[in-house]
Structures are given as C-alpha cells and as structure tokens.
Length: 284
Image (cartoon, rainbow, N blue to C red; front, side, top):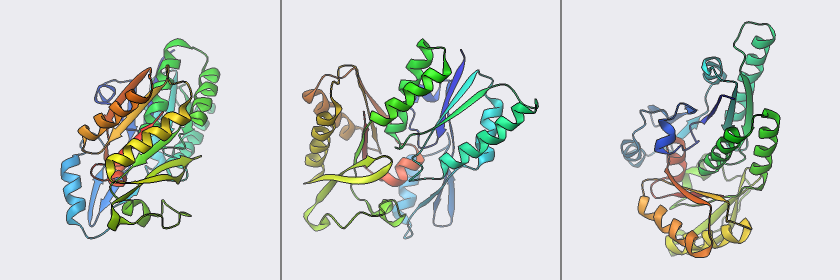
C-alpha cells in the first residue's frame, strides 16, 4: 500500500520528514500587521519572530482554503492520503480539509479524478500532537494494509494521546480567542507560568509554577503520571527557538520513565505564532 501523510502547517514535521515525499503540509497564512507570511518551506522563524516583536498588533492566522487541500489530494498519486489537521476548536483547517474531501470524492464517483482514498483526522490537538499521530500512522501504514483498520487504530490513538504546553506568555492565544472559557489564573508579576493541556481539543489549565523550568518540570510530572506504560510510547517535544529547553524537557522525561522514543522537532509558522519565542509543546 502506498500512502501520504499530510497536515495543515501546524503539523510540525521533523527535518527528516520534510525531506520525505510521504509527508507534507498545506500552509496556513500568518498575518503580522500589514505583512502576510505563507507558512510553507520558505518560512523563516528568526525573521518572523522579529516581525512579531516589532509589530504592536497581535499576529493572526488564516486556515488553508479547501482548494489547497484539494490540489494535494489530486496530486497524491498514492493509494491513500491521511490528513491530520489542527483541532477543530482552534482552527477551520479541519472544515477546509473535509470540504475538499467531499469535492474529491464526488470527482471520483464521476470518474473524473484519480483513485486515491482520502481520510481526514481532526487531531484534537496541535503541533507535537499532530506529529505524534503522524508517526503512529506511519508505523501502521508500514505494517498494516487495511485502511479501515489503520484509521480505527489511529483514532483510538488520538483519543488516548495527551498534549501539554508551557509558554512564556499566553497573550497571543488569549487575544486570538483560543482561551475561551478560561478564567484569569496567573500573575505575570510573580513570574507564574501556567501548565496547559487539552480536553478533546479545547485548551485547559492543569497547574502552574513559579518560573519556566519549574513549570516544565511540573508539565513532565503530569504527563508521565497520565501516560501509563511509557515503554512503547513516543513522546514528541516541539520547541520554538529554544533547543536547549527542549533538551531539558527530554532529560526530565527520561528521569521519570522509560520511553520507546523521544522526538524533538522545531515549530513551523503556526505554532511559532502561538507558542512564541521559547514555547514548548509536549505530546505523548
């Protein structure tokens, strides 16, 4: 069985996966003041962070159009394409990908398009959570030929996966309406850093600690306590411009449990915009 695994551009692929034709992303666009940045292979993180620092307005994102997803489906040339999107509670990417799938399926029924099966998965997560699902799907596709069974197992994996994050600030998330329903919960003057998580794709607060390193340690404690048997688990750490901090989290995880593997990746444009400089997103 031939396959492709693609996502919107919040799927933070590793550098090796970006060079692998089996993986790809459909770009969101990023708006910083009057500047529009396409979140594709041309994305320059350092330049983008400088733009954000220099702009008094809050940066924003726009999801890919259905046409962009549809173009990828048509060009896939594989037996199946799995699409992993941002949580539907955080972005319109899932709706765009599904609209494109409906159009594509109609083309297939009419005999006017290539015969690739398309399956769209709402990650109910973002960034490292999307990558966790992509890595799990890759393993299934290499060992399992039945697409229905692969999809079933992938959805079960998604539903038991957890995502966590610690950021220097939550202001961009707050100003863009991604913290709806959360009360005021920390005092920046005291350097209190919240430990955040997700509940079926909606952002929630789990705990807080004074200082970034204590918050990262607390995040690892919570993640491992909720993970169960980690011996075969993959943990994915996505960092925004702070590899040293990602390595710190990796060592914390290794001190707490044995993992099947721990993967570190760097945030692309969407996660860079929301995580901001120094942000860490963990999924397992």
